[in-house]
Length: 267
Ligand SMILES: NC(=O)c1ccc[n+]([C@@H]2O[C@H](COP(=O)([O-])OP(=O)(O)OC[C@H]3O[C@@H](n4cnc5c(N)ncnc54)[C@H](OP(=O)(O)O)[C@@H]3O)[C@@H](O)[C@H]2O)c1
Image (cartoon, rainbow, N blue to C red):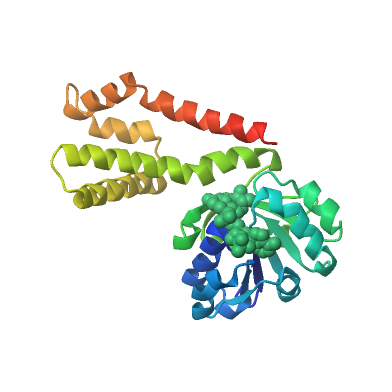
């Protein structure tokens, strides 16, 4: 994978996170990554890492084996039209743009190229993303593997049906914000019961990391792990039940489904 050349068109929040994660992973040479945006001054940090920068999207497409599209949805079609003539059949295009269908990408750039959708989250920057990837129906396995290997460099991947891409946007990409809000709220509670903000956040963040490690390493259902820390008539179950009386699980599910309704409305 070291020799694979990647161009990221639109190095904003998520495009930058990807470039930084690839750099951190060490699996792609910095000189094999090119990032673009119109405001080149904001790409200075990348140049310092040895990552190539340009404001010319067509140059970036010529450079790359894999072209990543990471611009806002309303910018995507115009940029695809701009780069279409540079996308030869040996290149792969991967769109991280919310809502942009594979059929739409191919309608603009042509049927000769393999197109994918990928929905990562900003934890790509620390190589801990969850990226849900969809390919077109007849994509050869080795091409799909090239794309999943690339995203595996910056976290975990899951191949999903394209019809689930909006759901993955909510659960995985927006999910970063939902998880961080839990951490912030728990930290606020921690301050109220005696810790400094800094210590409370450290305790909460490591506790969340520990909870995730229990699920990942032991493969149990979350409720099984909860049973292990809830003594009959004890303090944990008292707090947990109070959270549920106040609508904890319900609020989360309602928030997720509200986000999902919103993304479906935007289609
Ligand atoms: N943020 C997330 O957590 C996340 C997660 C998954 C997917 N996504 C998706 O990723 C896409 C980008 O989101 P974002 O949050 O990263 O947005 P963003 O921060 O606004 O990044 C978009 C970037 O595109 C650049 N751009 C605009 N027009 C361009 C052009 N003609 N040529 C080259 N670059 C251009 C902009 O820079 P200039 O203005 O300097 O050109 C900007 O830096 C969206 O479609 C979003 O749905 C985001």
